[in-house]
Image (cartoon, rainbow, N blue to C red; front, side, top):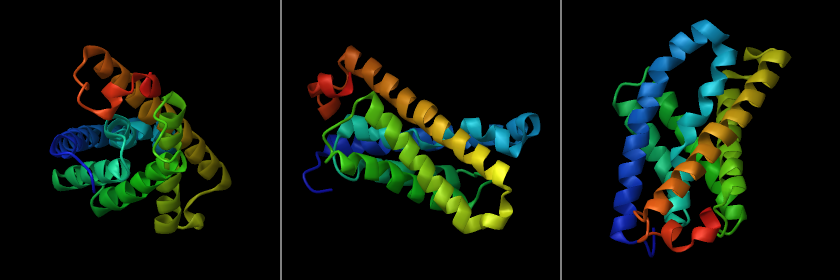
Length: 190
């Protein structure tokens, strides 16, 4: 976290904590949504669980922001009583790494809609890898695996990346982010 300003650290932490609380609320919806859509069909919800990564990364625009934000959000979800238990934190690490990798591939220079959507896809890949390691391939039928992967990739791109981009654009328009990289470099976010 070299060359980070105190306000960047504070905003990152506040947003990550807020996202963690949102994650907890979202996780309480998982059981009723699974009852309605089935445990595979409920994967349309996935993208909200990774929004901390692209949101904070787009605002701060520094290495490590996506990973740290996702891990903090996952820790908040865990410690506020998520029924997912320790797996919430472990998945958060994998999701944060997946999102961070996308920003690293751009050398932390691109924070447009496509990059944020790709970071959502990267986070989904991290989650999928964790699930396959934790549950094993035998846990999934081929159809279940493909539908789960497809829904998580789409949801990560839309509810994670695209929604984060829309939120950042709206915040930039208000001027509240003028002291942050996102507010100074409007063309990168808009």
